[in-house]
Length: 329
Ligand SMILES: [Zn+2]
Ligand SMILES: [Zn+2]
Image 1: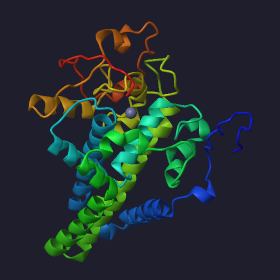
Image 2 (image 1 turned 120 degrees about the vertical axis):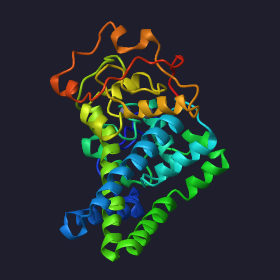
Image 3 (image 1 turned 90 degrees about the vertical axis):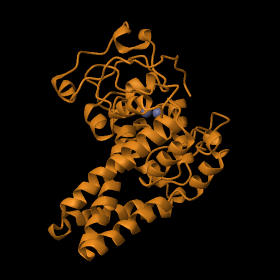
Image 4 (image 1 turned 135 degrees about the vertical axis):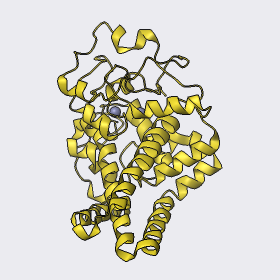
């Protein structure tokens, strides 16, 4: 991509691989995970316990860690929770191996600030593959300073520690999994647990998160046609990412704890927040006002297709917690 020399500030470069800015350690880590995940096709490495760990850890690292922790709690502060739970959720997110929570939060805040504009770190307008994965392979992208966008987290010494050692929880978990599996059932069980519970699980959560950046700015329907970006609602990303696929709703109301706002928009993370609220572990839960709900929009989104409606396994009831106004964080 070329720079715009007619402006005093250069146009940020986006799209494709920019060789001199590539992050070798990230490329090796992501590449290695994909290679190791391929071992899951080996019948001798399949165990039912490994499958159980795989599914459970998708929820722990992707659902509780990334979606509930990194995104709705740390990035948007859509609810508040005791500090011990915040650190626990942050640690779960670190197990997804998506980098430092501070950088994850900072980059995502910049995505909201510049959604689908030249400064957006990962818009499909700069290439679908760029928005899905290529941007993650760079250590430096022009105009992106994730740390500065998440200074509030760095002021917390425990979050600063997790920022520095974000890679550690996944390594500890992997070592524990191999060790315990080996001890209780032999080496092949330990390897099965590692391949399913670490490698394949990490890759599945990677692509789930990446689809939020790529697919839900490309395909789907829009409840809020004037959200000022290309964000969309896409049922299969919502299923894969615990409710994150209702991304057009989220861009319209970034601070809302609920992303699914229509009856068929299943949002397991919102259900988790409601549950946390019931047991006193979530407070100051933010939601759109009635006038901000999709049903009150003058240009309400199109009626759900059969596929969208089919994604609704249960109904998301009307919010019963306190309503507060939303503003861009
Ligand atoms: Zn987005
Ligand atoms: Zn967000």
